[in-house]
Image 1 (cartoon, rainbow, N blue to C red):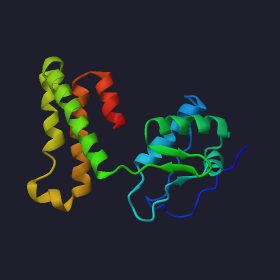
Image 2: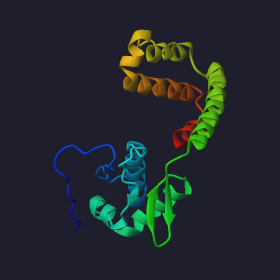
Image 3: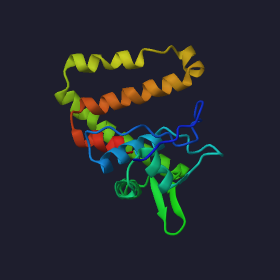
Amino acid sequence: VYQTAVPAGPMPDTVLKIAPLSESLSLKARAYDALKSAIMNMNIYAPDAELRLDERDLSLRFGISRTPLREAIAQLDSEGLVRIAPRRGIFIVRKTKAEILDMITVWAALESMAARLATQVASDEEIRRLHALVNVFSTDEVAAKMGEYSDANIAFHQAIIGLGKCPLLTKLTDDL
């Protein structure tokens, strides 16, 4: 039985936050989901961000053996979220500005196709519900509530993709 050490007090967003694993999926799938979520919720661009992953520490914190953890890390490596450097360790990957711009371009192309599909398969009521996502903030509020606005903006664009009712488009944009 592994024991998990939980630090006292709030954890900064520059440290990998690990959520407990549920029992419904394989250990590899649960470790993958938890690691991916933790990486996506971490401010990896902060100067003091801890980008090196310690396999032993993660194994202890998850309460699992290293085999499913290594499988999860290999999947994250194949997706470009982490980089495995032989004899050096495992590192969270920071995307360059050019890579981020490429990702935005690909997202826009996928979203435009999803919007086109939505015009064919989404109901008028589903399309009307998009207004609730964008009419939350006045122009004056956007600067004052940038974090909330950003979250609402992402939810709006994800909703458009969902209205296209094409699971692969949803998966591709989720992976971006």
